[in-house]
Image 1 (tube, rainbow, N blue to C red):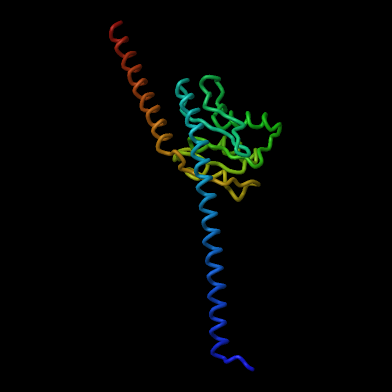
Image 2 (image 1 turned 135 degrees about the horizontal axis):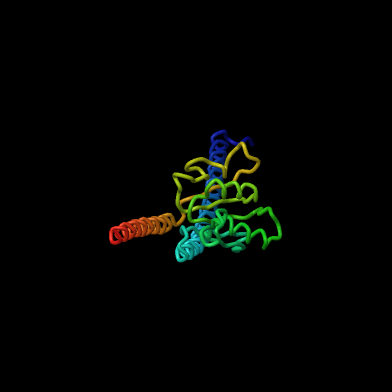
Length: 208
């Protein structure tokens, strides 16, 4: 006996409805998984940037520009650094440079594949070039540097199609705290320079 066409249509509609429902459930599940992964990554980014911030505070204690950096490989910090250019009389001794050197020693490799660098201030051209040469996979920075930032602010060396390596870039993690630390440091430095200048002027007047 032939099945009535109306029953066939009804059956097809039910099957389509079940199929669409299964697809929608699959999409929802995948979205939930992606969201969970994003949340986990965001928490990791926050945790590692906190350590970079602590290192930036160490730099300030040495009267260096407060920038700190860490290199992470497989969820573990393998390199740390903060600005020491003044202390070491070395213009290349930026936070990123020091962290990268330590990480390279740890891995016994000049290539830092599958590594992420966290730094409290957008890298300068020197450090961005270093990151490209090291083949670092990902860069996460807190504050933008509109004057010399080489990861998108002033120009972009970190992700440039003309170079032979492009780095994945994220920014804004712990931005407010890191920016405030930098602002307070430069405000204090300006005040100290002004006071030193005034003291020198007063000293000259006293000896006239």
